[in-house]
Length: 349
Image (tube, rainbow, N blue to C red; front, side):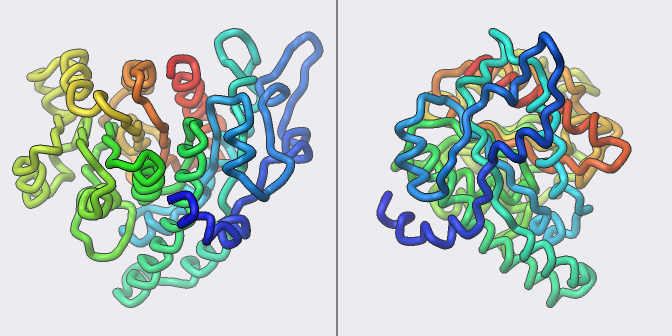
């Protein structure tokens, strides 16, 4: 399988922008007597032979940005998720480097440049069916790049930490990891939505549906579905599937029919016996700027507890944080949130 993706390596390299010392120095705010996270992370100096370089590096985690919201547009959502990578990177680089944050175990790879796709989408109107279909074809292109790169990272024995971008990229994460492992991968998804909508062309609302249909997704657990925003047709599909389990936010936090810790353990049994990915959609976290911001959702601390629980499991394979859409007033808030989630994963996995 490695040769299949290497045949497309040139196009992937056309999209990958490596993190470098120039960017690092521009974003770092050094202080006398302090050692910042960004001063100790590793970087690549060559864009060729990514797989071989990663395999030979003494790092455990590879951080990758996917600054795009094409899939959100294609799902009639609110764009803005393309900005999360930049604010997250600046925040992450400037936290302290100490025994807890483990900066030396981290390589910041860089980001996939989807500026051309974003430009094309900026000329489209989501009210026109023809334009939406064009956007969904662009998402297929993005899928290809994402899955190629995740494949190489996982094949090299590293754990990708992917900062989105829209939740459409779950498909590329799942496909790439599955191909690298040679079998379907399980997923735990903290999300207000199932992202299991119809296969009507790729967008941010059906990545898991496509991944399951194509045999890349194994067991799937959706943690915290919002009852108001899940169609009855989707509930019927989820309820019929032995591979899919879920709980609802209302059952957990409003009616208190389910207990948070017990549900963590139920999800644990469903996904963690074999390699699994951790997906966190910022739509599920209360009052976080996102493509579908919610006034009623999990607290930041609950989201961190969720991640803490699954990150320490033996088979945790990747982390994907998506759908955050910072505004000028909320760049610090979003950057800090995503940084907390990144470091929670690094500390425990």
